[in-house]
Image (cartoon, rainbow, N blue to C red):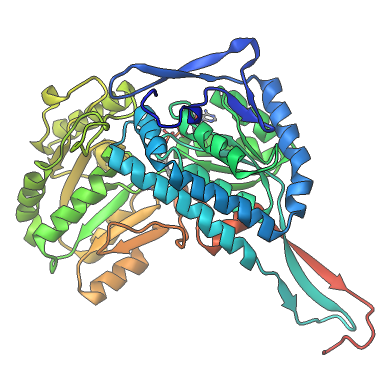
Length: 490
Ligand SMILES: NC(=O)c1ccc[n+]([C@@H]2O[C@H](COP(=O)([O-])OP(=O)(O)OC[C@H]3O[C@@H](n4cnc5c(N)ncnc54)[C@H](O)[C@@H]3O)[C@@H](O)[C@H]2O)c1
Ligand SMILES: N[C@@H](CC=O)C(=O)O
């Protein structure tokens, strides 16, 4: 922490109603650097009464925030955006310390996080309603969009800034006030965002970061009638629980959940290009990415050359602390994640997968998992069925396009899919046949503010980013102005 240029960005207290708040009775929890396993700080743990107080503060701040002009809200959002970029180096370092990802990836995430703020500061100006041709005599019909109210935003540790800004910027721009509950592993990035939000001029109670025991916090948020929207990014398992909890007060729910992305290589694809793209799609964020290629399907005619090219290119992966220059594979978030990766690999090898690359004896620490390549993966293996969230690549061969589509769709998940190849007929068939919310053809990069990000099936509900991102935080009010003189047909 002493390495930051601006030490005031390191906040260990929650941020509620414009104040830094300690847990009642001084409750706090250690935050660990997953690379060194050192404690880098402690984070306040609020109790249920304090969560209620935070909800009250956000609720009280809502009328004045929604009443501000769009221009005034945009100015504050744009200032927040600029502050993120001005403090990029510190924010990136903080992220690497608590999350583990290589510093360059953290810098990239700060740019990415900031880009959503600028996007929604502009997009809110285009939150149009409708005029509706009237079927009622002498009436004018239409609709306007209104902010939904207090929004609770619960976020994961793998993208500690961007998953917050993609939600918060949309909610704030729409006129909502927010309560952010970051993951316990990565609270400091969220609290640094709060420090910058304060400097940007958000009025007290508009942007709050509440830290505490996850189940208790979500129960209090979900039980409160003052919280009108719940936006969650995280695992499908927890998403299901939250949907049940939110049902009691019928909240508007947006769910960005797990993935099990197929990466499909068509027979006309260049093997080296496909192998590099698959490496990028698999190993970004050390495999801890909801978009990570989880099942790599390669046409049988290219299968062995692809495996050879993939294995050779894995030699360029360097494992170590994210703070060290040249490292592109950081630690996993904790030892539990390492144990899960090992279980999946063991299960696959026991069931006949070939272990082509991967030697855990080389791991530089308890929380590191060495990049691993498994060939001849089958649908019975856990590595195929589960989101592995680790640098473990499972590859299999395919022969028939229709069979491939059924195989790729044979998962409860439906977030993202990749297709590599140029035969338009095959590409189009896949694009329409794959049951995934996002399909990217010949590009690993697919995300960004203009994109409607989200999944189908049990990967989620709703869309973030794009013009649709505002929908999660606004509601349509229809109006009928009746008994007007000579309005009919005009
Ligand atoms: N679709 C997307 O946009 C997207 C983006 C990033 C991550 N993810 C998914 O997130 C998962 C990894 O993140 P994670 O391990 O932090 O997920 P997680 O579901 O364990 O935790 C996410 C959030 O929920 C909280 N939480 C955990 N258990 C809870 C409970 N029982 N009740 C209430 N809250 C609880 C956590 O503290 C955290 O804030 C992966 O499945 C990944 O695919 C999805
Ligand atoms: N990489 C994703 C986050 C998933 O973990 C994104 O861009 O939103």
